[in-house]
Length: 257
Picture 1 (spheres, rainbow, N blue to C red):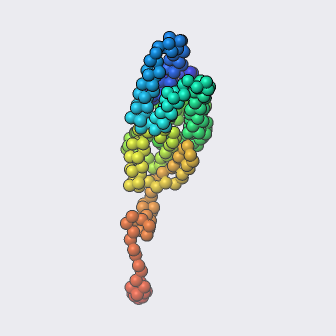
Picture 2: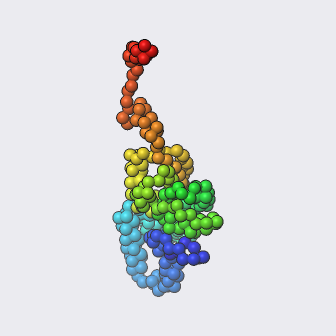
Picture 3: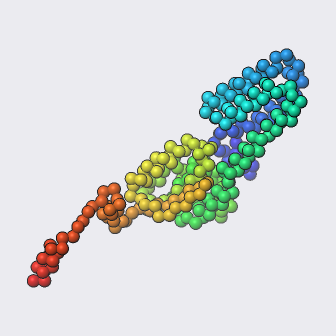
């Protein structure tokens, strides 16, 4: 399951990788069609298979696939004898393929992500850690293959605590939002990082976000910054200091004497 033909670069095994079986299985189905279409109970068998697919789809909470298979199954059972059945059935099978292609392009926007990722890494000092998605980190050789060098400051989000253990004065976070669709398990690491940042001594100094990526730069607060945050009325623990003009006046007179 390499993501490139240039060299072996394994990536996460995802259920969608089984799509490679669709081709040979389709050929086998077509080759055996003449045989199983002669069976008297072939409609019942296929209906059972479709019903099984509907059950699995809803069991996995895939409502779109469940609804699609339900509609296809009903159309197959009640309209298979119609003369327009075959062209309409083929059309119904093509529509989700086109829709899936469009959805994937819009969800990934791979070229936008890759260009921004390359520019972001190139513009970052090599001493400043960049925390990014696990699957992005594992594919860094492919994603950053056009750079003059391979950066060593990239870190996977699951290891954010190791990065913080090195006490950096500044660090950056680059999140490719496609993880929500392909690798939702990474949300656990991102949430734990966010929770840690909210209670840490780091403050955000730069941020960018669009539909596909989110980048942020965090810098450790100075002593003056911490004092300002503590005394600020908008802080979690504000300190209300009110000057006593009478005391200041008497103190000033005493000092002058």
